[in-house]
Length: 133
Image 1 (cartoon, rainbow, N blue to C red):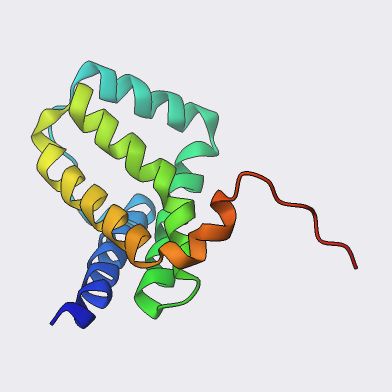
Image 2 (cartoon, helix red, strand yellow; image 1 turned 90 degrees about the vertical axis):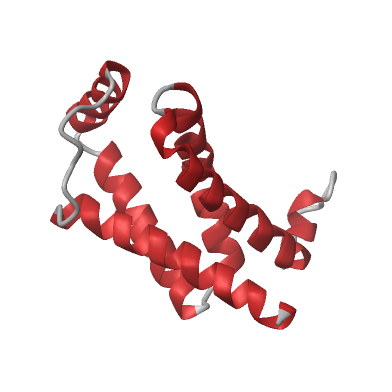
């Protein structure tokens, strides 16, 4: 069973980001009727920037596709890590009702980072010389 855990975690995390990334463009999940003022202010700022929300949703969609297709998984995990941190912090400090789902997403991200730790090992070397031709 344990040999299937990384694949299950990868598919679950991929589905989360694929669905919510696409929802950012297609709006098929209804928005809550009321949101905290801080969340409204944050998303108003993102919207006014004209690039931030599309970039976040495109990143989520791309990461979802990469995870679901089992391609470039370590890259997908590295790309989505800042998004996961911000999701957790938003729900921790502003909107606690979504914290359980945010913590599940964080747990999946951390588990997959551990499962693919061999791919991250070179990135975590304290000193690396540039490669020459």
